[in-house]
Amino acid sequence: MDDDLHGISRRRALQVLGGAGVAALAGCTSLAESVPGDDSGLTGDPTDVTPRAPPSDPADETFTLTAAPGADASEVSRSTWLYDDTLPGPEIRASEGDVVGVSLTNELPDETSVHWHGLPVANGMDGVPNLTQDPVESGDSFEYRFRADPPGTYFYHSHAGLQLDRGLAGPLVVEEDEPHVDYDDEYVIVLDDYLPDAPRSPSESDGTSGGGMGGGGPMGRMMNDYRPPYAGMTMNGRGPSNAPRFEVSDGDRVRLRFVNAASATTFRVRAGGHAFEISHADGRPVEPVSADSFTFGPGERYDAIVTANNPGTWAIDATPVRGSEPGARGVLQYASTSDGRAPTAPETGGRTLQYGDLWSIGSIDGIDGTPDRTFDLTLSPGGDGYSWAISGQVFPDADPLDIREGDHVRIHMRNQSPVPHPMHLHGHFFSVGNAIKDTVVVPGHMGGTTIDFKADNRGNWFFHCHNLYHLEAGMARVIRYV
Image (cartoon, rainbow, N blue to C red):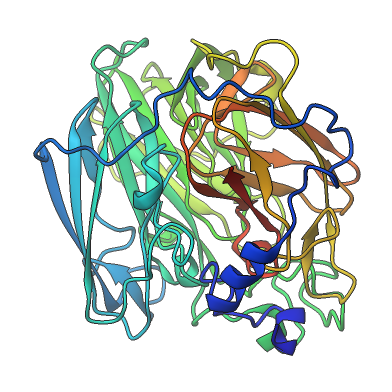
């Protein structure tokens, strides 16, 4: 394999399994012998699941997306890459059970793809270049087709290189037939970190960081925790001086669908003068729970009901948990209060949502009792100062995690680094505690997390840190059905 794969400028390999990466993966041995804690073998029952396939029915909803260079309308206009010349990309919305068709046209100077984050589509529609599909070359098109199920708040984004941090993301909403909470109105709120220039991998940077180890100063070889020099944060594509407004009427219950589409930022979200009633986590319904604030990492989503019982003009603030950049802001504007007053900022303190507060409505069938397949994984920096590893292996030079259709799979993760890692599993939901999610933040300083899922969607699936720069640095594995 090329020497540059030992750094993290290995773009071809991380788009996402380039030719050499595919060959390396094909030659990797199974983890059946190498994963600590596995004494079960491949013993799942392959007869109790139905493989997904792209729907053959005519599309109920059709959309077009054009990925092309453009200029956004954020705090400071920049030249970047966008879907349909908007930031975030246009909302894709469908009803539960609809067949959705999306035609992607690539007018970028580079190859691309679209991943439907959180939605368990058929493997060939998952949008990971060189793993689930060929990359969409410049000037070409690709037709995505999937069933909008289950309902929830999702988003779509490029899964090629660092393109997500250029602005290639947008919201995806699947409406429920029968919501488990009542509400009168809703808004989608997409949070992002704002990069004024084209993204660069740490190995191409000048050794500075906008908020990683050592703050903004030189980091030398301590580049594992590289964080780009973000200029600030955006809410629905706007900076705080041009904050989006969300109008509400007295007495209404308003559903806010929060999406963390950032590449490297965990946000703490608060609303002035109002509490949140959390109703969904990663699109899946939970027993409503009250909180004054919540934090969520890249790739996570929360739906929250706000009861409009405190007229005025209030700020919704999303502040980076790490880093010193200005946060994002929106305005909760009562229709009865339109005198142009400045929004009142949220108070600090109060109750912050914890994972342990989340109790899913429903469950994942087939994951009771002893798992058929167990993996014990460690998340840690690579020894070269640039890379990130899972159990000492840096992707793409990493063994796949082999499972069988029908398996109850359990993954233990132990974080041996000082920074959190938002781990995302493609193609499946998993249980974590009493919640059902597709992305979970594994805390730093030896924090541990255990997830369980049912192997019910055959294919090769990506499992990776959703901090884009940790992914670029190799924190990924492939879940391989055998």
